[in-house]
Image (cartoon, rainbow, N blue to C red; front, side):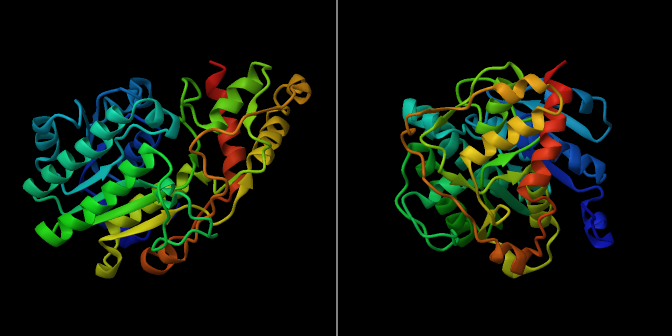
Length: 335
């Protein structure tokens, strides 16, 4: 990703709090902004994040870790103190997790979010960028997904992420806090955790192929997603901080590529690419199982709004990102 001189100057010395900074997206953001000479604080309780994601950053002079929970008001206030920007990534992801335990998902994703908004307001943070979700589109069947047209949410998780958007809008109207929401569409890439009951589909399939186990697709494999490589997500977060366009603030943006791939094609491509490292993977069978409750059949984002207002230019299409991701998985998950 090539930054302009203006962007580099704006980030140099900027104080940025990244909540959930030890998670998949958060740790990639921490790395990126440290490379831009920003002063980065990571807030994480390690419920889903991992210390190994940020271990190599611990000795960096511009990096600090606050171990704490966004459900604790005092922790949020202390972490936000003195910050210029907040990139709020902390959340309990996963539709199935929220269906199994809606109370905890709500406590973290709504209560914790509100705590961070209040902390940003009280500590006079310049701008609050937060991870929204494509799940907000719910039962809307229209493609591509346009930010202003959503349906009924299909899971407790989707409800929590929509409530985040409502709160962010209200905090601008009520308190003057500038916010930007990024509706992430199926983000994948380096550092995404392949383990656990709620692992995302790409790293989960990768680890299964590497172990010569058959991955199981939910349904017949024709469901499709706008899979978005991590570097595109980093770019969108960077743009929300560096933009001087006042009209770009206090809005929600699709954070995606603007293309879709079926789950069947994802599995087939992963098997093909991993077979370059281990020919036995070619013989691994891909299975089909029942459709997962709460799943949206198809997801495809319009990224016109982000292009127009933030000058967003995706650097990685799906296949480009998948090649980089597979290389990373193979080199790191084999250790």
